[in-house]
Length: 117
View 1 (cartoon, helix red, strand yellow):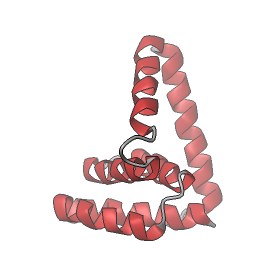
View 2 (view 1 turned 60 degrees about the vertical axis):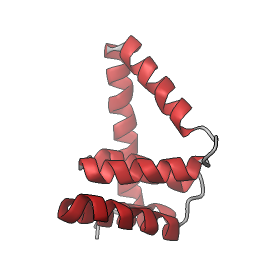
View 3 (view 1 turned 180 degrees about the vertical axis):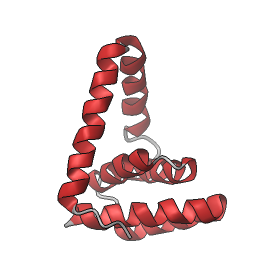
């Protein structure tokens, strides 16, 4: 379980966004294109935005990207994904990712709990 508080995690999210913005300043064409892809991918469509963010969490878990796990967990929460939905998706992620998947899945659940407070 993560020992980071909701305040710590929100501070980390702020730093992630600052780093993203700084890279956007250094590479405007790349990052504006990437942000357009992010926006398009997260829009409601055949699947609700919350479900899409849950998929993103599962992919981040399997890629082992802690900042991505935190970012997409916060986005899933913003789109009203439930803890039970996240836990179900994380179960599939562990099936596909084994031990490393289980480690990052536990982080995602701890982030969700901390950010929900």
